[in-house]
Length: 229
Image 1 (cartoon, rainbow, N blue to C red):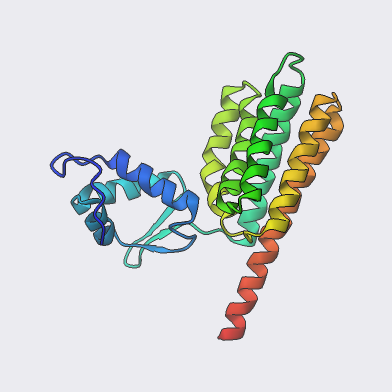
Image 2: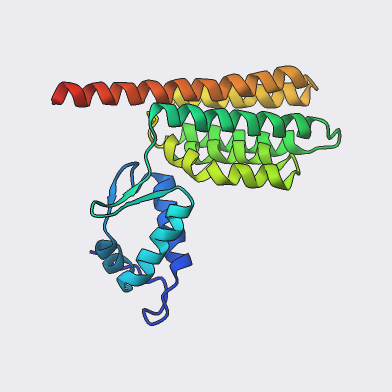
């Protein structure tokens, strides 16, 4: 096992460990529902189990980890109803942010978003589908950030890590990623053309498509489990 030393083992940082675990959950290195062993993580990071456990408690407060007494510690997972709820919250926050951003006549957001779309297109051509998904998340986070409303940005930050982790559940294929890039480009084109209502509607439809895909995958997986049992 490769040991990743975050700091001197005499002065471990639960924040550094939590950050590393957060990245692993966001990227899918720790899949949704996976069991987490504090013993294995302590060995991997070259620290004692105490800061690892403290980091897991911190991540539990963020909704990324579930600690079940007498059962173990697991990466969060979401039921179809949970997925619908988080996507509804996402739609409300993102479309509200977009409406506010569209009111800023001098906003350079379309150019920023266009740059992200360009990078995603290059990543797609290179076959780097993981990078495409990372840029997808950044695109939506940038929309919220352009609103300039701190409370809205903070509310979205409360679900953004879970959204990135959920994105890892979707099929990582060229067709899906191409569709996402097309939708993103249409949102930006409508924004640049001052077609506010259509831009907001396109964004809402885009998130709705993601929700339908995630819930359909969840139902399919549940069906496979039932069939195997």
